Length: 249
Ligand SMILES: Nc1ncnc2c1ncn2[C@@H]1O[C@H](COP(=O)(O)OP(=O)(O)O)[C@@H](O)[C@H]1O
Ligand SMILES: [Mg+2]
Image (cartoon, rainbow, N blue to C red; front, side, top):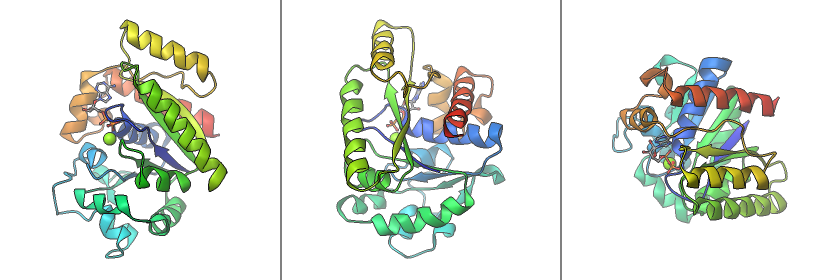
């Protein structure tokens, strides 16, 4: 199953979710998961310890431009069933060109090998997001619950998804809306209850609490289950993985 992790806003927890939901599905559900980093900033790559500045690894733009085969840019994290196809800033060139066929050329063979492919997307609506959504089975939308502005981004993302469903990809569905960086401030309570009212079916029961261990782990290149397995962050992403499994089965 191919899942885009998307919302047209930065700093909402997309990369964090791509990394740690994937890690949880491998660890607790014994699945094979690939994270495709389709953000030129390479944050998800960083989350697996691959610097977006390093040229020691092959990155996705080389696959998209036909220089290498898809499998040559798939790296296993710690020799596990959790893999990453990293991104570097050169990927930005594809933001202004049509690359749907090339991306399909990655996703089709990889979906034969992996149970889940999560595509981590940049914060802006553009080629990357629309191309990924046109080839995905589902989308997960992480919302920073501490930001009321994020509601606008959520509404706008839902519209984009609907128009892609109608125009090119009728199989696309929203797997869930995820409350991220949740704490007990009034703004978080209000944003969460608004989402509960507007999207009772889509909002995940699991909320990802604000947890400093999560912020640390992303920059240090280790999924939360290695960096701090007893943290709230680890508990929340494990719970999310189980809820995702319930929704897809
Ligand atoms: N639940 C959380 N608790 C604390 N920090 C978080 C949490 N989720 C994300 N972060 C941090 O917030 C920043 C933005 O998150 P990120 O996943 O990179 O957002 P996006 O990919 O949507 O731009 C990162 O530094 C990340 O580590
Ligand atoms: Mg990101």
